[in-house]
Length: 383
Image (cartoon, rainbow, N blue to C red):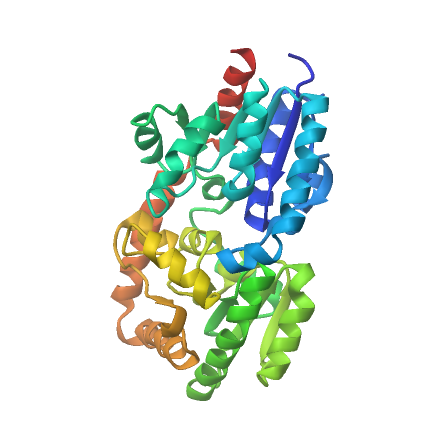
């Protein structure tokens, strides 16, 4: 097949990044490949034709989804009709399972081959979703090593492809170079604050994070703060920082999350893919999350493990603290971050132990993801 047509949907910033890396592998194998669907700037740079931007789907939480339900369902129906008319050679849903699995089921029922990239977290919560996965997809591309065996037990074909970010992020990040890029000194203590990549996350977390930063600064006035912000949310972050009286004390960046994580000593970070990025940068962190109260009550009942943060889930241990919902007060967040700051001088072995755990995790996740994923997709195309 010299010119496969690939349809894709990536639903948020992290999915856009994963899909962009997958497109690199696909286009290396099939230079004339065409791709389209829903995506973001990383995909667009690879020639992806996005009918809708990925941020349209960047909604988390039951109540939040309900507010956007009609628009999201409308987009899915329009895209389904378009794809049934175009009949791409394969559809690849990148994460966003609430959107993609229903779409994949409809396409598969009409004979279109479907692949899901990133196994839904049935090992963490919503184990009942496994039947829907079996009905919806021909193959799952897994980013964690234990997932293919779990899916195989339910009759679902899957391939472990490693986590793409483990190849993008160096095994030994260059902190000094990142600091030079941001105008920071080698001797500075630097905290990266990442309050999320969704509008709802900024709404629920940014004020808490910046209030915590104010408390940290009161205790340690010399600490420097960097805040990477996706461009669409930068204005909102700047406004909330101003309301917290911290606008002039925070270095708010446009993008550059990897530079910020490479440069920092520690990070205060929203639960999500970014926590895995922080782990791959070997950075001690405080993981936090806060959402609509009703969404939290529903989600906590479906949780299957004691951990929420990806680094802790993968290490199967509370390697770094998690402060969720009401626990994520500015005072508690500040205290948890300051414990890491104090450990820098008083207990460096504690920090070294975390770095070693994350280095081992990095090695385990490091695979030639683009090639392995492309191999699996080629087998689907030829089957």
